Figure (cartoon, rainbow, N blue to C red):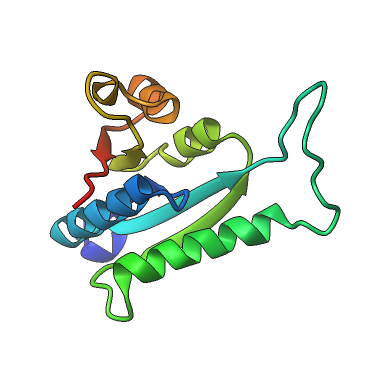
Length: 148
């Protein structure tokens, strides 16, 4: 098989703008550089659904555009102008877990951040990272933010 016909290595990273997701993206850039992979940086959004008293969403609020800016800012913060790997941003409408798991099909690796808490509770995975670890179709790396 020639190099041209070889499948491209891909690392999917969940990015929501939190410090742990920025750290996950930073970690993934180094892994992608070492593996010769591309990064698919993904953020997901959906309109909140609830009953009872809720905070109304303004008709002029464009959640997709807001999340696209969050993703672009995260990529700019981590990669800078001379990023050593290709980063493909994706903004998807839907639940975070389902979007990440769908994107992870055929990927070499799924990388997510874990916000965690201090002490014993900090040892536990969050709901998104926990679901990804249990159900992803590829290996998962959970990156915890460490304040410096």
